[in-house]
Amino acid sequence: RPHTTDDDGLLLLRYYHTKHRTTMTSMAYNTAAGLGGMLKKGHRNMEGLEGATIRNVEACREISAITRTSLGPNGMNKLVVNHLGRIIVTSDCATIVKELEIEHPAAKMLQLAAEAQDFECGDGTNLVVSFAGELLSQTEDLFRMGLHPSDVVAGFSKAGDKLLNDYLPPMAELVAPMVDGTKKEELERVVKPVLAAKHLGSEDILAPLVAEACLGTMSNSGASTISVESVRVAKILGGDITQSHVVHGFVALRGLETTALSAKDAKVAVFGCGIEASATEAKGTVLMKNADDLKSYNKSEEKKMEEIVKGIADAGVKVCVSGGTVSEMALHFIERYGMLCLRIGSKWELRRLCVATGATALVRLGAPTPDEMGHCDEVYQREIGGKPVTIFSQNEGSKTSKLSTIVLRASTSSVLADLERAIDDGVHAAKTACKDGKLVPGAGATEMELSLKIKSFADTCPGLDQYAIRAFAKALEVVPRTLAENAGLDQGRVLAALGAAHVSGKRCAGVDIDAIGVTDASGVSEETKVLDLYSTKASAFRLAIDASLTVLRVDQIIMSKQAGGGQTRG
Image 1: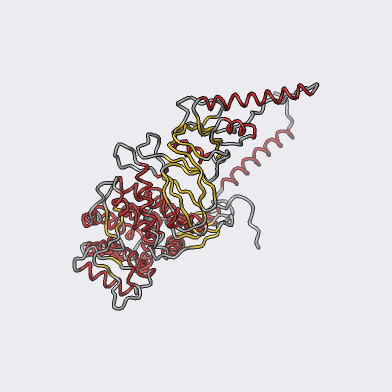
Image 2: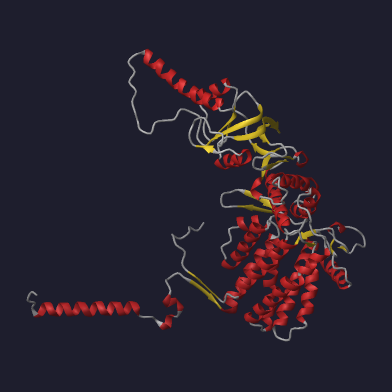
């Protein structure tokens, strides 16, 4: 060790003292600063009943108020302009909450619950948001009465368990279930109320189309299982909804490249690449000394392309489908050998065509093997609304994969998009019904009956949670009340008449939306014809209750400063 002087030792001692003091200062916690001294600068903190719980309830109530007016067949549309400037006109709750880009964490929970319901059942999303928002709105009066959030959570949990386990299952015994999912009439009975809730007046036209498309995707074994992905929608602008029809097969929204426009009992070759001369991976230079070299070069390229197309034709292929460009030279030889050629730019559409025909998308250009080729009973070009479309049609009993396409016609793109969403919900409902065919009365009948039973249950509970259980029962009335309000009826009068009908034993009594403007009409149908799926209703109640309890259990919100630069103020 080298010799150190007294000055060097003093400097070393000062360094150690300074380093130790800096470390201790950084680890010190200023107790006077509270939570602000512990977290990074720029964070936000809200806690307590007024600071967090009430604010969360208000946010959920606001999002519920937005979607509630879209509930039921007479629900109003919302016009949403998203961040890309796209205009969406719809009454579908899942689409509305998705396009609103909600930032509040509590309201975001209702959005996630609605998306989960849309993914599982396709229908009942508005019931989730409306019922959850009404449940949380009822808690404000309970908090003013002095109830603790724990008492409210306990009451809601008890009422929810009683509803899902004891009161809702007997409601399915009041209506005959869907017995056979392979019958078109049975599917129409289930699908029609779902379509009417989304697009009132079109359900009599759309329900047979959806039922026929779903039946076309079922296997020949007789099992009533429906794949949602196997029912596609082709939207063609112009005409009206009565011109819509079902194609058992695939519809490409573009015409054929060749002059030949039809082929029957055709083998189909699908190429994921373009049908053209492939470019070399490495750059190269071709040296041509005279005109003969240039002629022979062109002829060799033509000869190679002719060999490829001839090999495809000799394999028995009648239809070539390309995922890329088709060169003029390749198209010339395809015409010479009498084949059809179609170009599809979307890889998703190409994948659906492979499903419809049983083909395999090839990444090499050449003759396909028998296993790689698909089959189609008829391929032809047709003009619909001035737009050429190519149809790959399969006959009944075809052994290839099942796929149905509903060709939709409407006057505007907004109506087309809304009809597509309605059909998607209808297909989901048909799929759910094939799994569980139990049905319950609709038009607010189930909710009103459950509300009366939950009120009776509250009278048997001795604790403070009985107030929360009564609030739960009152929240169930939001469905018949909103249906009456959206239909232009006197909601107070309708609720009173509906409650009286259920008390007198008419358990299937629901709101009659057709009673608008009818003199002395009570607005109540004693035996409603509207039916809802039991599994969809149970899933909606479960998700709404879970989302509400999650929001109520939050007593503090801590938000960090958002990453990135500050936003410019306009």
